[in-house]
Image (cartoon, rainbow, N blue to C red; front, side):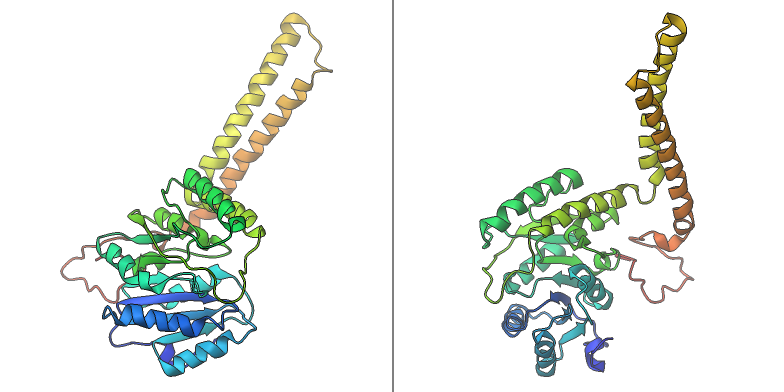
Length: 342
């Protein structure tokens, strides 16, 4: 159930703001008033019109009371409240649904991200980039967090091909059409740049940003975060490369293993028929049979995957349209969220 006052659901209906800011918040009641002041100082000083969506991810510490107080003081600060804790990806997803600004910035609520960086991030977008990711180059966290994070980012760069140093930095800036085109769920918020790249938004860069030590409370993430991050990396890599062509993955793997098993059993058959060598005590025979069966299963899985995705891929709405030139007699109507610069 949403607890949002009518005016906060559309902070500036007549004139969309220049900027929308989405802030997931979990147990951050103490930090929100100071964060709001920093956002005002950064954006008002640049003359930016903006709206702020604070998504309370099922907090129990009075975070929602703080959001309500901010909204009463300044209607540009709107809020959404989850009935329970769903996670950062869910908070970003519902925030992305509501943003109206030409530019969208995401940041954490714990004051470690600096709102003063927002104007510089937007300037990079104005240079033509689709997404600008923050890079906590001088990170103010203990080694138990920074060392695993560096390894995690190195592996992600290697697999994804995106030369970003800090995939998990909460401070990022996007063009609105980018966040309207990505589907964020589970724990995939770490890989929004990769999801954006898959959607066709390839102009992605990074900018070093200031990072502050945590001022209130304690971190909400533990060691399991990095295990989950690796599993999410496997998931998003498969989704971005093979979601629309499962046969290329499963069929390719199946073909290789099937051929390997076939060659093994062919050689064993030649040994039996030509040289008379016994096969009953040959473990290689069992390996060849297993490879053939595994290959056939993978090939069948690929075919089933193609049958599952075929109806979705036949829908034209499955494709992101970047630009369109319409006939003179065709009305453009209201711009679709998935349509980019038209």
